[in-house]
Image (cartoon, rainbow, N blue to C red; front, top):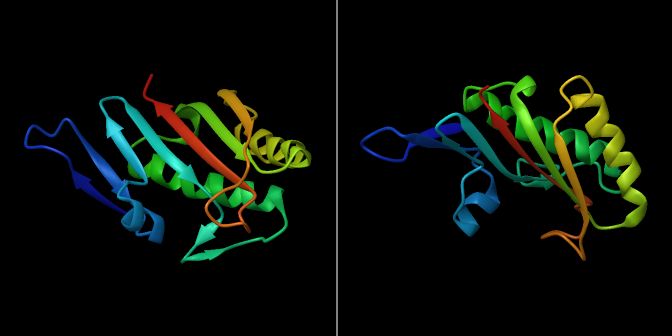
Length: 136
């Protein structure tokens, strides 16, 4: 991952992972704004390949790892996470994804929202996860 300043006044910066979707769709992996790190939706795509095809639990863990790496690049930690949003494509994926979130954030207890969607950008993707962290 890399970082880039967003202004002369250094009010924040952006974190880039180098992923194909960031460049194609014109967004950053994360934006650091004051005391917040806001991480874009992360999937189990690593080096352009979807990992753990067919396994929502392992895809969730991979997506969380990618998101937490961006949080770290933004200067915060897992313990600073205040919000997790996740999107699944099938109803039956809520529990395995929830299990992954529980394992990673059990002691942190961030706010959390789960939403079922019609699909993600690649049909092999079963879950997408967004994270927000706040320096408290």
